[in-house]
Image (cartoon, rainbow over all chains, first blue to last red; front, side, top):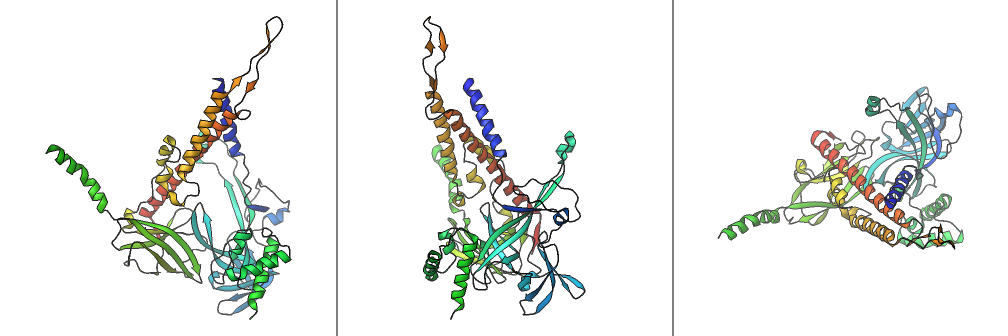
Length: 247
Length: 235
């Protein structure tokens, strides 16, 4: 009987421990609240205290940024731009008109402030299934055949009172919180889908043709680069792109 | 004569099963270049020799079903079993769902008769034998943690825990000069302190997580089947 009690106690401890495990996989850095919303609670890993005004901003930058868009038919539009991270849409002010890019598949390149963006398809594996989707990505590397990309998304967490809670008279506080999540991708070939970036020497070199892997290894060794540090991976891709640009 | 008759009756379902063309889609791979989405797959299966039709569908994260138009080859094309094939979908502005994530679903033969796997009732199988339900909700070949690994892990943890519990004992108590016990004996554990509780607890936790995992996958299968038979959105 004593053993049964002990076993039960440990079992309860293990099960309850599972519920308190933080979900620390995503790189949460900033807390945002969408427009037309009021007070929200924050329960994230690394909340950065910001002014209330900036919380109500679903855009990448609070203000419009000067920039341009080049379409696939080489037409260039210049104006003020902003990226809505919640709706995954690019908005633009051309002259006195505000426009929404409804067909981003026709975009070649977007320059907004100091950053360059592309609209690309990507493939992501979730629970063993491959999903295809598309989004705006910030290009972290110099122009070339291989692109290292950064995706910004707003993660929405909502807790609402269920009908069961209402029937039982349990009061559930309705919460809604938003977190800015960064994910990194690589586009190993132009006009092909982007895939989630896998760090580490073996994974990273696998994105490049076998013939070029040796010079990448030599460059990384000479420069003492780490295959797990993003800044070093950007340098490696830039090196490859500069080599590919030469005849 | 009666035995022969019973044998003939009994053997018939097996003969019918042997004739059944049991097609199976495997090695599904997805790639996109420019505005062309290509789904590569291997068409195989037991006794599958005759060419058959295969149709491309997609499902999103909410398990809504989508059917793309402008695919090649078209739906009337017959695919030869035992070979690698691909279906190509030409994406355009109107057909592409920018706000959705789509996963391919290749359906062989009659779409309404497609087997999506067992529903949440498969969790009862996992309740009986850990890992058993996994075989019925998903193709175990593509599972990173194989069902037999779960069975082995649960069996190993539980048996080690029971063994540790049986091997646990208390040393002789210390007695005073007058013969009264003044200190009870120390508990000796087989592996480490509280070994039995931790080992059995871990085994039960793996078992419970397996049941929950199978129930979730089974629910997804049931939702997918229901959506497939009720509402298909054309892309």
